[in-house]
Structures are given as C-alpha cells and as structure tokens.
Image (cartoon, rainbow, N blue to C red; front, side, top):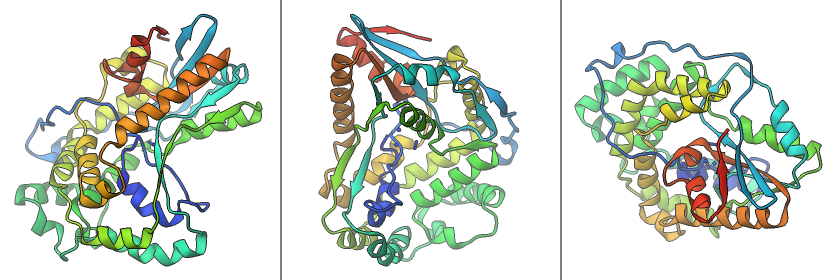
Length: 350
C-alpha cells in the first residue's frame, strides 16, 4: 500500500540486509488501479509540466468509511500517496475514533525477513547497490528505444540533474528514481505519514495495533542478491509507463492530493488513478526467476487474504476497530471494501 501494497518488491530487495534491523520497512502496497494503457496528450514532454498548486497549512483530511455488522463497527481511513508536502493534517476526528477503538488494523502489506543484524547488513550493502545496475554492463541508452531515451533525458535534466550514475541502472530502478524526484519537486511527499501518525495516536491511547503484513523469509540474502544481479528484468514497460505518468499526470496527482487533504471524497472518486505504471513495474519485479523462487508470483492474493482474515477477526471480537486502507481499495468496484460488502457487511461512505 509506504505506499506498503506490495508496490515494490524492489524496495524489499534492497532492504533484505536490514530486514531485521532498525532499517526494516515494508514496501508500498500495489495500488488497485485500472491498467489501461497510458497515453500522452502532447508530443513534447516539456510542454506538459503545468505547475499545479498544492495545498498547505491546516487541512482536515478525508472522512472515514464505516463498515458494520450488528453493533460491531470498523472505521476506515483511506490512505493516499503522494500527499501535499506542506500540509498540516488536523487529526482531531481520527484521534477520537482511534481512542474509542479496541484495535488498530494496519494496511495490507508484506516484508522480507532476512534474519540478519545491522553489521552483517552493512557488509551486504555493496551487493545491494550493485543489484541496481544492469547485469551486462549496458546503459539506459542501449536498453530503451531512442524515443524513450530522448524523453528520459528531458525529464532527467529537469528532476535529477547532472548525476550520470543513474544511467547505469536497470530501467525500472532509473524510472523509480526519476518518479520520486519528480514527486518531491512537485510539492508532494511519498512517505508513510498517515500510517505513522495513526500508529502514534493508537500508542498514545493504549490501543492494540495489529499488523497483517505477510512476511517472506529469506534464508540466504547474500546468495539471493548475487542471483538477482545476474537476472535480466522485463522492465521496459515499467520504464515507458513511468515516463508517461510523469509527463501527463503530475498535475492530476496534485489535485488528488488536495482532494484527500481537504476531505473531498467526490473529488477523490472523480480523480481515481486509472492509468499508472505500478502494475507494469510489479510484473517486472515479481515475474523474474528470483521472485518466483521466493514465492512472489501470487503475492497480491496472499496479502489480500491475510488482511481479510485480520479484518474479519477484528470485526467479530471488537465493538469498534479502526483500520487503514488505500483510497484506491475503498473506491474501486473490485476493491477490498466491495469484497467486505459482498460478505454482508454494511458500508457507509463519509
């Protein structure tokens, strides 16, 4: 869901050495968004960067979805990424609902547990950095089309600058680096501020926190990294879609972030992200031999099942539960919320 779904097995891969240390963190969940082909609206990417105004200051955030059966209720806060960088989120309503709850259910996600300590992780760091690079020593210019490289060059100059080290990276990693820089330069942030804030509120009010994340055990992270270094990824679709997303969707992302901050549910619905790069990037990272070896081929279904088991358990034993889910899963016709409705739970929107 960070954005935790699953979104990037890549993030997990680089966190392998630190998975049991203070650096451990879950990857973002894979957004449940339409996979329709992205299309540019103008030929020159430089003409598409109209600056969007991102809200700042005190903002209420979104209302809460209500899931209930009998007198048992689950309040759900929709998570979104990116969000306005300078927003001061007014959590008054969230604090009240969390305080009256018996349990906080964190969003679906997964992490890799390499069972290594901090210092052993440091020794693996060179291998992790090397894994970003193409196994045959080729550069981006040699791996993508001339048209893609021309677009990349324009965007790289704008958002990354003169750092040419990224030219040696695999297309997927180069694209994600560019995406992160573009988001930051647009007045937005990708960190997990929502989950972090709500978790602190729960701790302050002595509310039990349940993390339904799926844990994948890695027995030999060093060998896995070496194997991945030799692996060729089918990641040009991820590269292409990420370029297009940056070229045409930054303004919409800012509007979506504003809608979340201002509590505009209809705006979130109207601006639902349907054309993203995430499915293509996830496919590149979960479809290779290394990912299949450690059981990543059906990861989304397993993560979804883990969260539903935790959610139904919490709903059955608690009078009130507070939960976090990506906004996409609340609004999508086939999202998590629709599946709860299909099981007979009453759903009320904000």
